[in-house]
Amino acid sequence: MANQGVHDPINTGRRRFLTATTAVVGAVGAGFAAVPFIKSWNPSARAKLAGAPVTADITGLAEGQRLILEWRGQPIWIVKRSKAILDALPTLDGHLRDPKSDNKDQQPAYITGELRSIKPDISVLVGLCTHLGCSPEMKAEIRPEPFDPEWKGGYFCPCHKSRFDMAGRVFQGVPAPINLLVPPHHYENDNTIVIGVDPAKGA
Image 1 (cartoon, helix red, strand yellow):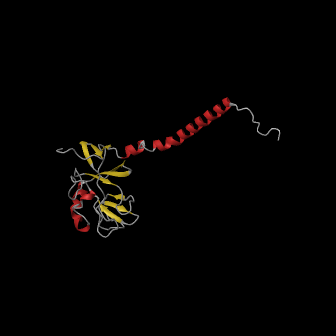
Image 2 (spheres, helix red, strand yellow):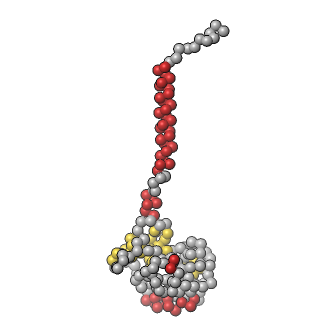
């Protein structure tokens, strides 16, 4: 017990070094931990672009062809309809759930009537079935199909057999409750469509 009450001399310099080192390491660690948290405050570049307008050049779009874009994570279909398809649309009214597109939640206010388009021959639709969000197949030709012997062209969802005409209007008696949606869009010029922006007032 001869050493009781006797302590080694305190190395104050070493203690300061260890204290400072611990503080620095702790601060660096906290900094790394904070980076993902702070970055989460700012939307990612992908998120910023998700709602940005998308421009499409339809110069080379031929009758019966479809151009597919992505806007807000959704497929956008731009289709050039033939005169035969346009002539067939009015004949389908009796088979459709909302032939005059009276439900205003399904398209912008400037999209009216059975064509559901700004230009008669160009259709712009969100390419997702309004039942469960599947992607319907385009069957643009006027010819008998296994699911409809009097088919006049349109979209068929093989998942649950929903059908839509070439204006995106839903048929009666299918699971899809409403027409295919029409996104906001306008024409920058005769051959350029801007998806995601309404036409300027007075245009």
